[in-house]
Length: 304
Length: 294
Image (cartoon, rainbow over all chains, first blue to last red; front, side, top):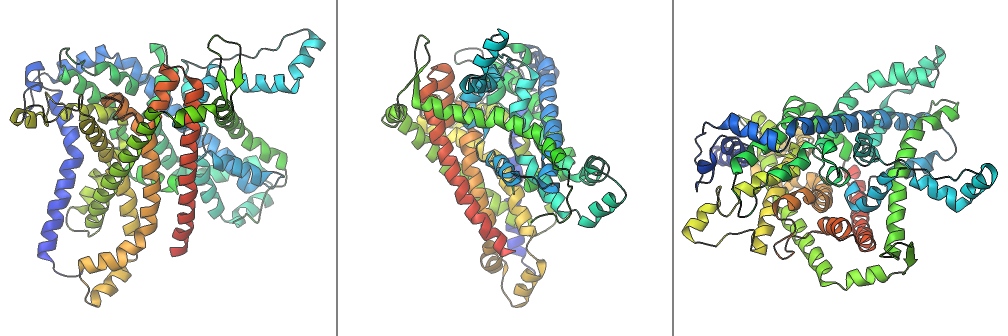
């Protein structure tokens, strides 16, 4: 930039180009492998000239792993998580920034702590909760003696039961229950000038009006960034969908990949497996490419 | 920082927080508490509730060779993949930040890997690194049997490290590049005026200024290597061969859902939670340092 460094510039170009090759090679290999027939894909080394069976393989992968409905499931889950996060985090951040009520700091910390423990480390009990989401409330009623009281008074035995296994809410809700977006909004709300709030109040706007007509339109950038990140994150979830979709009807595209792994000793249908991989990795890749700006911004903002 | 102007009707304010609070109570605090309870009790095999066993679950886990093997595997995996992913990303970001021709292009492409689901890239790497097809199989043509992730534990570990690092190079690159770009150009130009070369400027100006990002990424990479590795392990090796890649989260999953040992799995979850909490607290200490720099 400031001086002439021909040798260093050459080295820079070479290393960056190697980095580029490293980053795209798996994509290219997956794409080429999915165009070969069974014999060519198992050649060692595999030919890097594309074969002619691309659409056949895509079609086979599509039907073997039943990808149509699975992609739809993935899409519903990812959109649900993104929308839920964008809305619920905004509400919470509004509450902890714009109001003074007793216990506000406590609520702040209660939410903050959820950043520390990802879903992966508490899967077993979370699974039990999702099998019956009302079980925490049942247990509270039992322990406090309230269910005994209700039974004595009304003669009705309290047994709350609502299973969310194999349902979209079961897929989506536990993934929303973290604080990632809340702090993104909080940081932004703190930068909104107080004069704006004063002016709005002067004009007779209550909190709800201010939130909907002023704060939310101002947060559009944050919403786009958070939505992009959450969509990708939810689309790429694996362990959680794998656990709670015991029934095929709600499985997602990513969990379905397991069906495509060639068995040891079976027919090594790598071309089909790679075609399936290509289909599953394409939607998030499109989102990253199309929403690059929001993606980078969201990542950097949510992790801080 | 606090707002000077607020709304006075705080009942509405609390209502705004209720959806989030209900969610985190049901899906976060309750399960976390449940994990503690299960880890201290033992479920009767034929029903009849849980009996209190104190720290027995922890004792039996900590005395099991399998568990220590899993911890060692996780640590080896975390150390090597974090080191690789961060080093490569740091070099690429530093070079991209030199803003030679084409740097805009690299800035776009080098982050793609992070968008891909771990299981999808795992399947791609399983093919690329397969012993009988794909690309690495070439070495088996020359020296038969030298590479086989299905039989050799070290090979399997190398495969999952390659897949995980590939994804996280993209992630680290985003953060390193942002950190480099946040350094004022005037600093670097002033140093150049004083006659320092590119490498000198890197070690004396840029590197010290991005150390907070390095610490931050170090913690994030290690915690992610505990979590995001699940999909990679499940697709590529299923924890094998001979438990060589049975990482901690994978072991929780297989003990809890395949072995149906909820108490053991809960105790393992607690240990992992503690580990992650310690790392996070460690990270907050360095975040303070980072704020200090600005």
